[in-house]
Length: 238
Image (cartoon, rainbow, N blue to C red; front, side, top):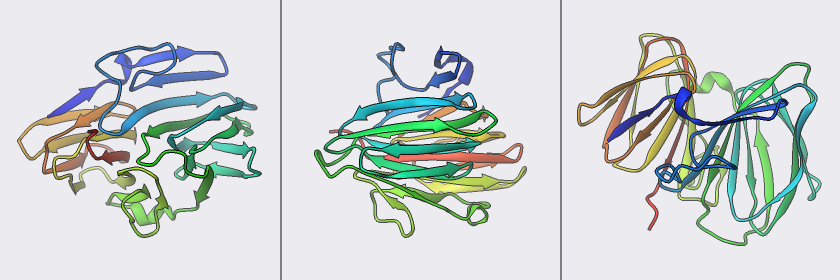
C-alpha cells in the first residue's frame, strides 16, 4: 500500500515559540491508527521561533534523529556534548540509558526541522550524540543513508533496524528505491513529488505531506518540482 497523509490533516500544536505538526500520536495528539510505522515512532515537523527552544529534559531508550530543513539547531546535553546543526544536515541522539538535553534556535530567523524517533533494537545502551557535515551535492539525484543501523558507509550509526535517507531531485527527474516490502515513510521537505509503487499505486505529495508505504518491492519518486526528500525505512515490529 501507499497512503498519502496530507499536512493539513496532521495533528498539531501551537505554543507561540513552537508550531508543531505530528505525523504520529505525540503529546496531546492521539490517533490510534497512527502510533508507529514499523519501528518509526515519531515524525514531527517543528518550527521554532528565533532565540527560543526546548529547555533541558530527559529521554531514555529511543533513537532520535533531527533533520534541519532551514536555519540551525544548537544542542547541549549533560554528557558535555554541544554542537550546531545546519539546514540539510542531521544530528543523532541515542537516548539509551538516559540523557538530559536541550535544543535551541540561537539564530535570528525561524528554524524548521523534522524530529524523528525510531524504536531501538537494544535497550540501555550508553547515551550518545553525534552530528556530521554531510556534503549536500552528494545527494543530488539519489537517496543517501545519513543515519543507519544497517552498517551503511558514512552514515551515523543507529541502534535500530532501519535507516534514514535524504536526497534532492530536480523537476522532471526521478529516483528508484528498493524497499523489499519494508515499512517506509517519506516526507518531501521541499517541493512536490509523485510516488509510484511496484503495484501501480500512485500518489502526489507536496512539501510536509507524509507518504506511508509497505509491501512494495520498489518505489519510483518523480519530482514535479525541485524537491528535497527525507525517507525512513525500518523493519516490521514483531
